[in-house]
Length: 286
Image 1: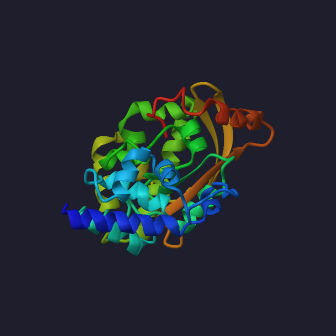
Image 2: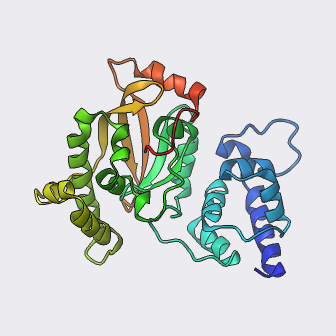
Image 3: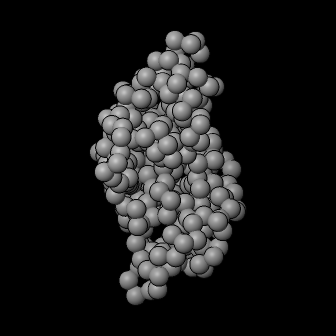
């Protein structure tokens, strides 16, 4: 990147930071705030970056930001799709595909996610790629930010990596397999025959997973709109929750949030998540 590009990138980040009200992203404005919008350290916190690194970006210095960091900054600053694309162009990075791990998350989805601080919640794609999680979702389900390529899809890992199934009790595996297969069929149909992402993933699963191939041949189709699930947590044991879904207008993204199942002690278990954080998790769950 040229020095001029770095300066323009820094100026753009600063302009977007200054327009956001702290309360819109879960911070308390407070009477002693001296800067408009967010502080640099708050943007760094939201994006999962160090304060020093973000300061360098705004100063027009430092190293060229990665695609993952740019996606995190776009979400932290609640950028529109056009603004997100402009950020990637400034950083001389390719604009992400619509549904990969760095896909644009609608600011409305992020706003809703930010308003659920006491509930595990995350935004995923229709192919079960996790785009963003709140801290309680990380504590309950594991950090999903490290998966790339086909493995970014939990549905793909479910059928190809045995360790992914540790999230659910063994007695529930067949039910989950059937639900994932029916949901993928519905998602692929909604995308249409010209979509290659869903088609190529399904073809790979048909080749690599006899279980998936057998279930696919049954032609069941159903979106996962709400579920009652039993989640195996490494510290809390089995936690029974309701998983609710809010779909984006085009159906490509879903906001998932988890509430205690009635008639269980899951409410107490979920309250413990804030205390435990992610200290007991390996990052391999979803």
